[in-house]
Image (cartoon, rainbow, N blue to C red; front, side):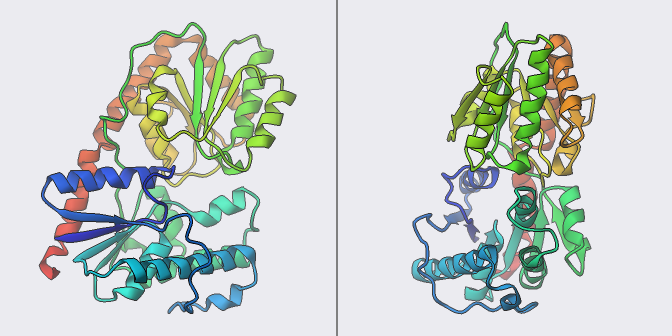
Length: 376
């Protein structure tokens, strides 16, 4: 069976999806499956000129806004690149981005299309202050879900909470499957270490949706109360300058290290103590499972896929989004009680190994793929 994994970002780009799919390919290749990866290089911009039309809505109603115009141009670029590069047929196409899915179905209408929706672009844009909720860009992006339902043979998402979110925009949400992300234990492994000063780490894109402003405020409160710590922030993004200035203003710049983008944060993660990411929304939150496999205590917000991974008080701690005082309180508790911290981390690792293993993902995907083998 010949399968194409259609990504948007190249595999070397940051993010759980792009970094996870090559490991899926590796596992299936070892099993004797024929699987290839395809993506749009970052340098391909403004090349496509072919007209775009959707079957379930008229996108031109929303034209003239920067987000929509960029989205449509990216669709044209992906279409241009795909026409030029793919000359063979596949038995199944598994897409991991809406543009990839819709382009592939347009060019290969007779090939079964499986679509995994990993996250909500519109929610991220709203939380990052780039579009208004209920505005034309929001309406355009949520209309894409209905188009995907119309075009894809099967839709999968990564958490029950995100399935519930998608159900508001689809006619038959019961057909949405859930396959949580999986992680290769060879990449994320604990390391024995003892830190005299608690080491906190967060790994994410530096944008408002990730709630790092709340984290810095919480850390400022911890310092005012006399606690010592180091906060390691791995990632880059448009909010970096603002966050660095915020750390200065809150008098925690000396305690905070801004690393910028790092290709393999898993090489550093096992040497820290507490993973904390107070996201305002998260479809799944792959980095929590990654941190759990590295035996870190987890602190997150009770939103989306984070709340499905963390059972509060059992394998991590949850706080409301945007609540710096509550966040400072749970961090203080973990910093002061290493035994409690270790017990939470061990429970988190046990759950991650059982629930979010790559083996489990391969088994679930195999069943899905096998259902299309009879059509190959």
